[in-house]
Image (cartoon, one colour):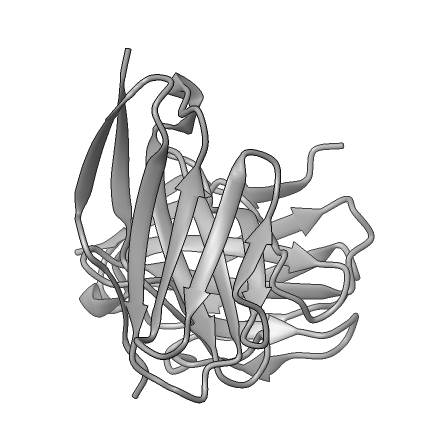
Length: 112
Length: 112
C-alpha cells in the first residue's frame, strides 16, 4: 500500500526564519497532496493542497513544492512565527477523499 | 459559528461496553467523516457520509457503526469496545467530497 512519511520528527526554527518541512510518498499514482497543521490538543487544520499536474502552489505565507520524479513534496513557511508551532503532516491521495494516506507528522518548534 | 464540535472530549470504557460519539457541524456541509489517530500512525478513515441518510465504509470500519439521520450530525458507535479501539477520534466535515475538511477537537477514548 501507499506510505507517506516525513523526513524529520522534529524541526526547530528561529522566529522570523523560513521553515521547510519535507515529505516523501511511495505511490507514483498519487494525484493529490495535502498539508495539515495540528496544534497540541486540537484537530488537524487544512493548510494547502496541490494536484499532481502542478509543481508549486502558494498560499498565505506557505508554499508547497512537488517533485514527482523523486516522489517528494515540501512545505515552506515564510517568516516563521510562534503561532506556527505545531505538528505538520502531509497526505497523499490516489483516488479522491476516500483514499488518502496520511503521514505521521513533523513537530515544528519556533524558537523566540 | 462553532464549526465542528465533538462530544464527549474524553471517555474511558471497559472491554465489551458500548458508546456513541457525537459529531455536530453548523456549516451546512454535505460530507462528514470519522477518523482515528494512533501514535506513530497517520489518520485513518473509519466511515464517511456524503449526505443526510447515507454512510459508507472507509479504510478501517470494522467494530464501528455510524448514522447520519440529520445533516448536521454524524454519530460513531462502538457496540462492543476492544482495547485496540483506544485512540483519538476526529470528526470532520466538508462542503463536498474534498480535501479541505474541517476537523473537530477530537475525542480521546481509552478502552481497558
